[in-house]
Structure formats: C-alpha cells, structure tokens
Image (cartoon, rainbow, N blue to C red; front, side):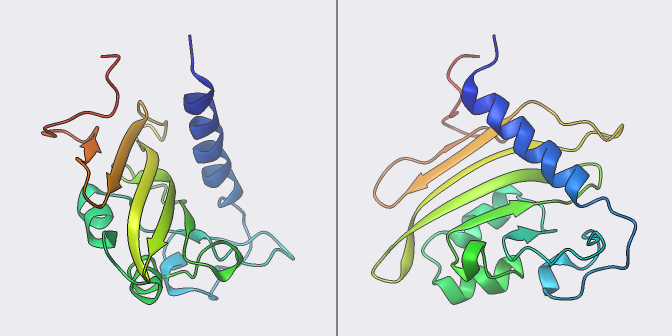
Length: 154
C-alpha cells in the first residue's frame, strides 16, 4: 500500500518533470534553471524550481546556510522568493528530484527535510528517498551508505 507521503512525493516529482518539459524557448530568469528548465508559452519561471540534483552533498551544503547562501547554492530564490521551499526538475538519469523544505533559526538553516526520487535510465522515478536534518539531532538519510535510514519499513 502506498503512503500518502509517498504518493504526494511521486506526484510532485512527476509534475516537476512534466511541467518542465515544454517546447518553448529556455527560461533565463534564474541561473539554477539553466540546462533543464523550459518555460511553457506565457508561463513565468517559478522561483522555487531548480535544475540542481538534490544529492546528499548538496543537502549537506545547505545545513546552517543563510538564505542568501541557499539561493546561491540552488540558483533560485525559492517559493514566493523566500528561501524555504524548493523543487528540482532535473530530468537527467541519475539526478535526484523532489522537494526540500527549510526552517531557519537566527538566520541559518536549522532544519532540512527532503523527499526525492532518482531519475532512472528509462526516465522513470526510483523509490522515494528521504533526508532529514535538524541542529542537535541525528540525521537520517536513505542515501546509500547511511548510518541511519529514514525509511524504517525496509
């Protein structure tokens, strides 16, 4: 049985992939969208969609970052131009797509929650992976080699 969280994650990833697959000219509004984002005719570039693959290294680089550093790393300013919510639309095989939610304390990321899938060679999504981080707490990660998995059902 598919959990609501998994279903929402898959719908989000699928929407990001299909929504970014227009045939119009490439968007140029945000540096993080170069290479994979194509705007549909008349559609504004969404400030929360990046082409960056949500790898474990990228997620670690966001820990304790300021909003300006987050925007620089992801190349987009975030939903409503607030660096707290992002989606990835990278369609390249091996890329990690999904979403990241960030919370800040004293101007630095203090909590990070990511749900993503990896693009397989045939363009489909892999099983969902989670990555959770909070200052002062143990991180959990479903990336290979993690010491503490987020998905404890396996």
